[in-house]
Each structure stands twice: as structure tokens, then as C-alpha cells.
Length: 394
Picture 1 (cartoon, rainbow, N blue to C red):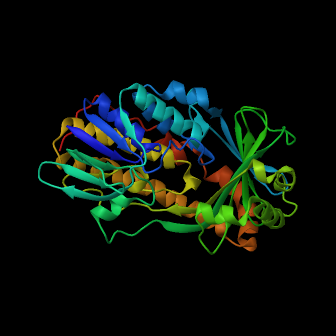
Picture 2: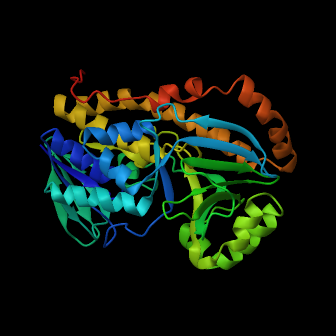
Picture 3: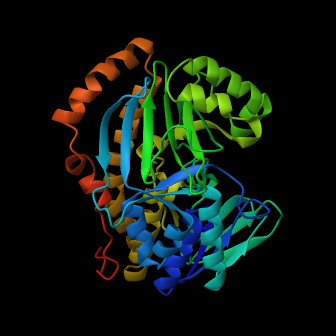
């Protein structure tokens, strides 16, 4: 069997490596002319994502480029701590990494494994027959294989080819920003990740591997913007708006006062797509963000994509198509939709008005003590392990 994989970000190389482990040939076709080695900001690989990468022998590589997170700390806009969550397994904590570093690592490992990555191949159509598929690209070239995997992200072309009426991703009402400022002026501890809930928004921040203060935030906006549209407004203007939005909130006021335009990442609109109605045809299947896009609030986007890529490889190893695709969807749909539901609730908290934020500030400490138990909240999610050696049945 030969698989054509559309998309060379995170999901594509993981899927290719997992397929190679399953004894299936794979080639990656990426729309951009080069690897995404300078795109995006921080991302969190949760313990379940680390476990999944371990199946491919990549967990140690991830830890080499990442920074372990041992505790999530919640504060209010005055800097007062009202709760903290320790990682469930101190020996396998979440890893904080730059998206560009992770993409570069995965692409490098794929090439080392003999997997071909073709750049400048923007998919425009797919011809499906009883025996295979032929991908047609914008440059006039084609490629033929037995199956085609759509790992082409939230704005997936493959998803529309499978189902022209499929709903697209939904804008969350939030724009994404991030950056870092020199030094550690806020007493940050190694291994802790902080979430400050201010009067009109939240700020996430942590100590970087270099000893600086890294930060990220989601700014409410009624109008969605692409990354390019947001960057056209200019980082300097966004900094001005964020300083006004956060006012004297701690530590947002101090961090944003030190922030500079050249030390910022402007990501544009954040999207969610709980699950596509159709994940596959007989020969074409969606994987990762092309099929399901949980909010970045969950910290599970990359981990869910990695899990899905590996589960799909298991199914193709053990079952013929399209039964393999049917088994894959049954293994994954309920889990990713549960994660997306959690992210939806968190997003709603972020876009609440000022009164809503004040209520959260009063109730959150009580809820943290009475109801929000880490094992109950995250155990089912973070402790998940894929049994690679188990046979998949139709």
C-alpha cells in the first residue's frame, strides 16, 4: 500500500512515520515552498501527546526541544494565586515547545526515515477509483497512491473534496498573540505555567528555556482576521490596544510595557471545528485538524492530531480500506468531540464581559477547592495511551 499525505505541518510527518512503522509507504505533499520552520508560537504537547510520540521513538526528541511543565498556576489580575494544578505524572509532564521547532524536528525525522516530502504542491482535486486515488496539484503535476490522507489543517482542501457542503471552521471570537520579554522580573519558577485572569481578559505566561518571560493571550474581536490581515495592522498597534485592554492588571501591565513589536507573534483569528460530519470516503480520509479542531484553550490541538495519526496507521495496518477508515473514526470521534466541548466552555469564559470576569474571579477559588480535582478533570485525557501492538478489529 502507498499513502499520499496532503500537508507537512505536524500531523503529516507523524502520520507518515506511523505508517512507515506499520509497513506502509507514504509520501508527503506540502503546499508551501519550504518547511514551516518559522511559523506560529508556543504550543503545549500534553502527556497523552508525549505518550503517542513515544510510540515513534520521538518523546526524547520532544523533551530535548521542549520545556517541561510541572504545574498550572491560576492568578487574578492583582497577582493573587487562587489555585494550581500539578501535573498528574511528574515523570511525564506536558512539554511546551515552539511550533516551528516541532515542525522542524518531525520533518527531519521523516526525511531520515526515507520519507519523501514534496514542497510547492498545492492540492486542487482528487480522482478516486475502486483501486486508488490520483492527486492533482496546482502546478499541473499529479501523484497516484492507494489512499490519500488529508492532513492539511483547519482550512482543509481535502475536507471540501470529501464533502463540498461540509461546514468550515468557526471563529471563536478571539485573536491570538504571543511573544517574550527579556529577563524574569515577575518571580517565575521553572516548571510552572501561569494563567492570569484580569478584569477584561487573560494572559498566559511562563519562564522560557533562555530565562526570559514568554507570554501569550487571546484578544476578543467581533471581526475574524487571518494572520496576514492582523499582521498588516502592525504589531505596534496591537501592543497599544492590548495595553489599553489590560490596563493595570498584573502582570499584563508590566509584561506588555516591556514588550516590543519585534518580539511579538501575531497569529490572527483562532478557530474551532469540533468534528467534520464526514471523515472519509472509500479511499480518502481526514486526519488531525482537517477532521477536528479543538480550541487552543484545551492545550490539546497538537496532541489530538498526533493521536489520530497514529490510530489511523494502526487501522490501515490491520484492516483493508474502507473498513480501516470506519474503525479509525469509531476510535477517535467521541474522544475528540469531548475535548472540543471542553474548549468551547473555556472560550466562552474568555469572551465574557467585565462583569462576567468579576464573577469568575469570585467563584473560581471556591470551585478550585470544592469541584476542580485534577484527576477527575484530566485523568481520562492525560493518561490515555495507544496500544500500538493491539490488533484493530472491524
